[in-house]
Image (cartoon, rainbow, N blue to C red; front, side, top):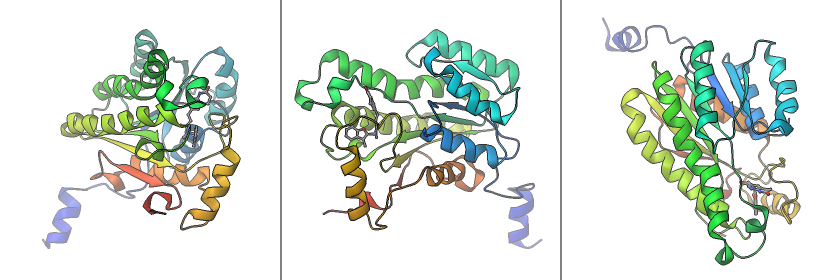
Length: 273
Ligand code: 0WE
């Protein structure tokens, strides 16, 4: 048997399409409304063939998520989850165990810092704002990865959202930048721990997108304009492009990619000036 055939029959016997998510089961944390990055990635995962469950943060967002996720079928699992509560996380994964029995994909698209911490100077960040930002935005990935891993018995792909403020100073991003640095480092340590179980952990570092989380951030409009002028591609990223990268990272096409931060930012990150 020629060597190339030996590879296709022994290593990848039924791999029809490396970019497909057919038959994969996933859970999505972080849909708030139709503009959410989590929703863009969820739609792309769904179109690629995945079956998805969703969580929502607080009663205020329940209706939104039910309306969006409900379009994937009336039996779509939709559960409340405050990612800072261990009992919420336990209840979500108990329900996933009962309904799915296993899991292949997990999307973390959750971040929060108290508003005042994103306005003044970083040097004035309170102990409480620092704690909250890291608990919601970084520790939650560790907790959700730990809960996901036992269900990812065929291997899996864990994906988290980051931003350039993790590595360079973006004025006013402040404690969120420090929390995203923690998220990115956590991605690497999780990738090391979970690699032997064929569970991959990666981040997408997205350029600015007009979402609920971005709304009301003073100067956000100017930031979008700055990207249009300064990125190599001379435009901003669109949510569908985050979805497409999310599908790739979740798929078997990315089977050798773990612990990485992939920039989906129209090239902004390569620039020195
Ligand atoms: O990660 C983010 C924003 C996350 C975020 C947004 C808010 C607004 C409302 C976290 N916490 C809160 N807390 C609130 O009370 N981004 C990448 C978007 C973003 O936020 C910025 C940015 C960019 C870009 C804040 C300052 C400067 C740039």
